[in-house]
Length: 193
Image (tube, rainbow, N blue to C red):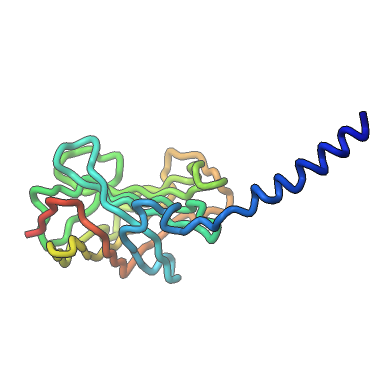
């Protein structure tokens, strides 16, 4: 019986090693739609960058969302950041003030941010907009219909949401994104006045 186990291991071990030596996965394959855009800012005084794309809004018709994710070297998601309710029928080259994610009105841009744990599928701490004494805004500065590239700027100030239980004890209590810029592929039919 013991000899059978040894022979079985001798057969399975090389097979397992060969199976593990597959082709390298390209980052674009893992990033998917997030490879369509980039976003940069100064985050709490340090340079910060992530990937982004524009998706259709769910709650309100004729809206879009700018979805942002930051991935680590192993391509696990570590941060998730969303600008909600970008109104397609009224997007202009102007500054749009942002409100907390809990303010659910059809005519405001909302934002949310959270950390992500484990292998990129477990939500960490949730942050909400700090309203008092801060400017929270997003501005669309340029749109090229030929390439469908949309560019803009933003600034947002966040803190761990009051009603949330802290998941990560060492998480930053507040996060400030300043000098933010983005460059992303817009959906077909997108317009900017």
